[in-house]
Image 1 (cartoon, each protein chain N blue to C red):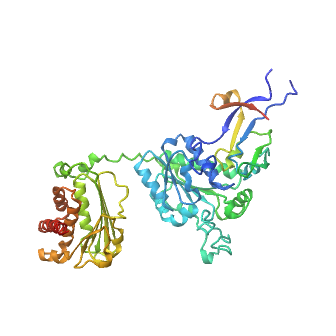
Image 2 (cartoon, rainbow over the protein chains, first blue to last red):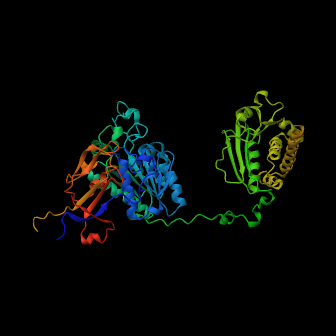
Image 3 (cartoon, chains in turn green, orange):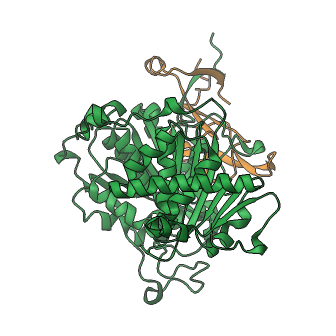
Length: 486
Length: 94
């Protein structure tokens, strides 16, 4: 006789496969999420994960996480994860979707993120009909930052920035994102759902699944707005917060399907793959014989190279060109290079500087915080960057006299009136190239052929190339002289 | 045997280390078979627990629960279902 107390049971609802078994977060808490008890995010996360599971797209799904309480999507979802800057998720999702045509890209955003700082991004992504799915979690408040009013805050709702309740006269009306986007022609599906009771929750799960399914079918842009409880900031129990969604929030934000154009949409053909590097010259109409060969063979030895140069002056002194020639020469020599300009909106005058790095290995950051060589084309630039030069480094200064208070132990100085020297050679604008000559003499790694090639590539006028070559030679000579004099 | 108790259609497993005691499942459960413990778990939360009988395996508690794996819903296997479900466990119905 069978034992009736023991029966066969099978799991019908359990943790989705698209979640990690354990989360890589604080040691003690890796088995649970960081969300407060009763938070709507956890429930919505589960709906997204279940939809990914059901549609069988886990291995090609990419979540774009927002800034806000749900920033940690990458802790939980075992899919591709990218975390975007505040509000920028739809732009990031666009880039990912276009560069990975077979990816399923889900932008997960809160109301502060999407409807305030990111209002432009969501509007244009929707208007372009990007084939992405946006999960828009609306809890009518900025929660992570402690309860400031959001564009979606209800009229009369108290927040830390509307302590007497939101007033239409002062703060405007709650922003109806779904209705707004539904006026556009491109979106395929926009629905507002809620987490206010069992029925709403079942419908929310259905809507999220549909939004992702439409993307899998290649139909275009979907947005599912989910009215979601925030018991902590609303200062309610989780159950009261849930009911508040249904009884109060829903009156301002009515639920329903605003757009569903799936029936009249044809799936977009998947975009063709990006061209390979080898295809580029052909696509750009460059003939093989025109491709620069470079002078990597002329680079001597295999010593490590890590040249870090900061060049500064006023706009018009050729600060950026000096850096460009240096970086281009490094490129010609087959090295890794970075050139990072930093300047104001003025084309002339104002200040300008650039960071140049040349290395044999990969360059981690294009910033040069502690230059080995500082090229200061005027005194303000010297004073600005003088202290950043690393011990054993060089300062090349354009001026008659090096300010005594800028002298430092362990930093060598070449101070000459480069502008006047250039003027004597034919044009004061060649001062930057004389200074470049000094840098090249210090660095002494770049083959001369590479300098010549870089110069010809960046300076179109042959008269100037000739002057610049002479100026560089002069700079090398001046540095050698200075070294000889000690 | 006519007096033999018929096994419940459903069964719940609640992980009391993952549960944060929000109580949404208790509110949501149609047959009202979930309750809140008096005992605090390791983290200091009171947690939800299955009263032990009456579950219909409707799955609503799982849907409303904000934690990914705090609730697992099981259904009494029928021959038709057993062929489609990969994970089958044997356990006591109470």
